[in-house]
Amino acid sequence: MTKALILYFSATGVTRKVAERLGRAISTEVREIVPETPYTSADLDWRDKKSRSSVEMNDKRIRPAMVKRNLQVEDYDVVFLGFPIWWYVAPTIINTFLESFDFAGKKIILFATSGGSGFGKTVEELEVSVSGDAQIIEGKLLNGAQTLESVSAWVRSLKI
Image (cartoon, one colour):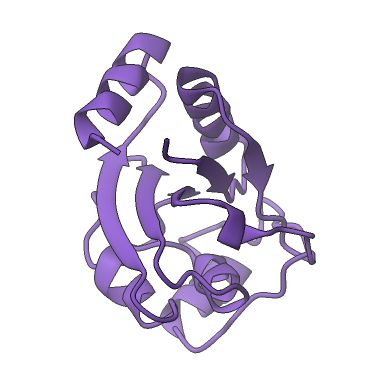
């Protein structure tokens, strides 16, 4: 049987709710990726070119620090990785996370929340941050309208 883990980053709580719903749908552990310095509403102001999120997304080399967690990713076959879409891709803290662990041989299935944009070049921008033969799969946008039943149906369709 496939052993799965759900990991997520949520700056405002929206992705957290989706991750928790996904956790209930597949009855597995849900863990949060926590930035060392939490994001404020000013940090998230995409209209301000000097806001923290704007600066990070304009320089893809930036790797925001995250709180270190005792996480044994080698114990899992599949990792569901969730985040909000920022500027058509994952926030760079997701790169920080992927670069902090060995995902060799793992299947990483993405899920995201978004106010209107899709995954864009997310997979391409995350592949440079994983080790070995990890496989990143563009999953699904799971915005607020997703029910427990629809999330369960999506997971079943993955045949993992």
